Image (cartoon, rainbow, N blue to C red; front, side, top):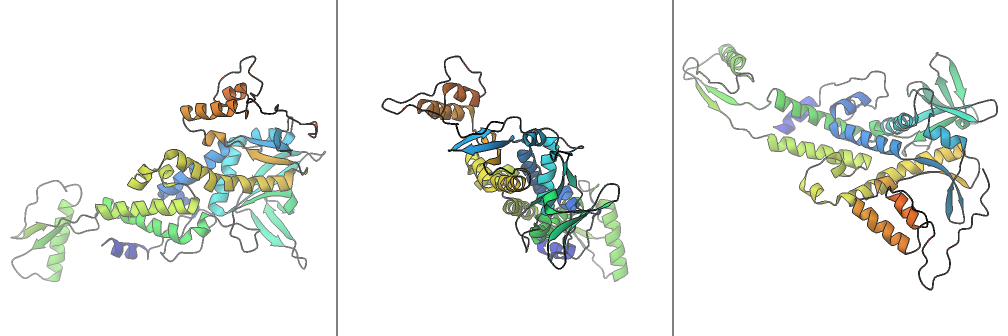
Length: 397
């Protein structure tokens, strides 16, 4: 029954496009747009919000790497920009969320690199996804971006003038493929499934009664009696008393389709997990397998299998366009996502401080406690060499 309704619903058109980029129609018949996947699919909304907010709340730092050490570049203009106000209209948290959300959905996000007269970067302004196109110069095939700004002016920007964040999947590597493309077939089917569930709960797709009449009825009269019965006892009178009409025998059918709906919902969540790299438990999947999984292990899988990929992509683009020195990089502090419980943190920093990995004050700082005079030295185990830190090759900033 569910399969039959899925097939019926898949023939309908469901296009709520409002100017956003649209993927070609899928085999299931539903056009996948930004609006209908975010507004009607809870698991997709949860995954997009989770990834974008987690990337946004992580501290970003420009660091110098030398002889195995990472030193935060103090006073860096780029550090200040990325962590305060990258855009005239968006602070750092909103800007990061926007970049990840748009890249995740469309596969691409473009930001115009704005500089002052001295060549310093003063802004990273997002460009509307409908306001730019990647073009190729003829006959050299050099890529450039054709952009329409907010005032309607047409601009021609070189790759060096924009940050182009992209997911993998494009044929030439210059354009990415987001959920609207890579997830087109799966998400289209999930849209049909959601509509099926809504139809089951809202109108009841399965017949609940059989009307038996002792005599012979014309088709016209039979349809009229069914319509009269439905008008009296559909939904609002579902719990009331039924009066058999004109000698009819009313028999109730007991059709249990709740299990099918739950199975469809589980399948939907699993598909979204596969598409986005978010573990099932973080999408609030309450199946037995998800509940058995260790939450700390799932957080680790989410960090390594999902967020690290975003860190690599965003960091590589910023490094290529905004950081000239070979020794400088953009890094994220992901410790907040992998700390575990307070007891786990205490056990970890205790072992680290006792084995000369960090000082006791560094351990206190890691778990949110103030430093104490006299605890700044790194403990050295008996027989070990003295721990020294050599930053002599680090330039001054």
